[in-house]
Length: 115
Length: 147
Image (tube, rainbow over all chains, first blue to last red; front, side, top):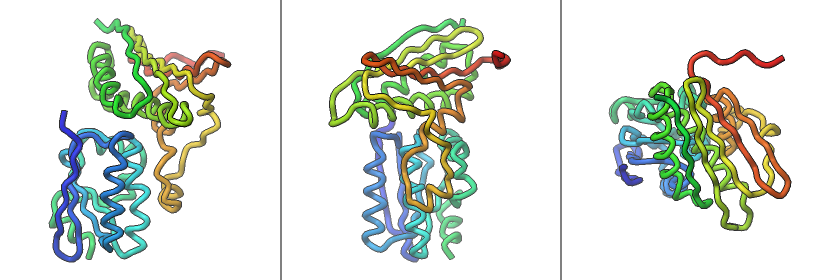
């Protein structure tokens, strides 16, 4: 089982790339929430979240993105979700989030969604 | 093949959710449920247990949560019991995701997911004894509702 892990790096145009690995659930969501809040506090509202190595997400995990996307959009940003695994995509579909969040297959495609 | 009966007991700490998911994965794979439902059924039970951990026991009081699975060729049933405070999922309405986003609300989606995924979500409270939440997924054809 992959340990929960978040890595981030700065991309051009004030975009932050955040890669999440492992299981995003009621036990780990606060770490994800803190990462996003810290980025917002630093004035970064354009986020690309790589979900390709996220094995599992529950409503607590999805709730972090639901709670944050409004703040991102209010500040000329957005949260672009990148390459969710089938299990993770299924949860976004069940919650009806696939029509609300922008999705991208790679960083280039994600960057274009901010322009 | 398909007859399954087992249970686990955890304390009310989210660090045990991974253990619950592993247990559910094992139960689903031993049952006649289709493997493509595995992620969803695990999610429904994870949501139920996470709700109990968050809401049933006040003031960080330690309590136990009992998760029992019984399955046969026709149905997969998970019964979750706790001794925390009464909870009434029937009073919880399905959320509007656009409203959630507008209000920057992060929680309140677990029961909605349970209802979306399972064929039956039944809750019973026995005064002074325990809460019992029964989640059922039918295998194959869903039985006709009783008159």
